Length: 295
Image (cartoon, rainbow, N blue to C red; front, side, top):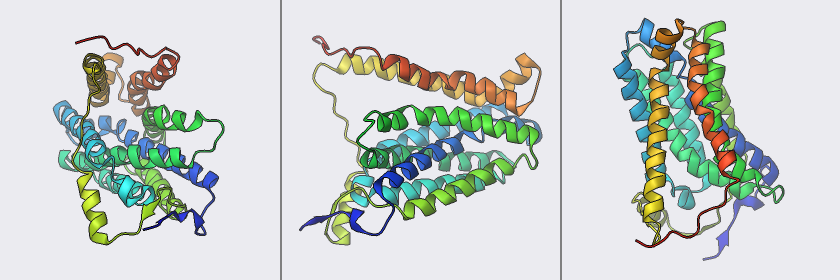
């Protein structure tokens, strides 16, 4: 049957949709950085151990990776907006859960929801940004989807650390701000057009197609095994180092710098995390290796 796009309906123009998509993508990653300075508070006031914080970090990264791997293609069938809104709602639920942290389980639940939100948003909202991007400058969409999210996490931690240390209601205010901002993002996304052209089909057929996307497909181009192994090893190592800093920044700050100031905790974490987008800019100037070699 004939394909149809929702751009024809009375919704925000594509340029405004691009801004909304970019803002909601950034907000999702900003929100994921807000709990990190509070790890110091949870450690001191709630007795959550360093091993508990490490477990929380591992679970967060695992859920981010799994949701990206398993749910990454879902928006191709269900649409960018619905899946993107689901990511925002997951982040909102995570923020609400983190407002009531008194023990490790609540912290884990909140981070699980935020991890799912980041993985789904990377795909659905990232694709929406690319779909609605203006023709010029051509590099803008790539910049937003590749460099801004990893930069937003430490920025969210820094903003949260400042609010927790110097603002009122330190265990609630930072989450309340993010939940309200994400809720506004949901409303704005509802007013945006859908960028995926979908074919008229039965609900059952659409559900079957969506379920098929849950099965991951891994394909390695011929001759790319060795570079892929090296890149994967480096990615795993850097993610592990980032996880170490995320989990143990409060303890490192207290032991080595002699302070429990949450803004300083955020600075310690950001000192490593901010290197990711910087490295992206620097390596983007390098020439790609096209000769993979044999074997």
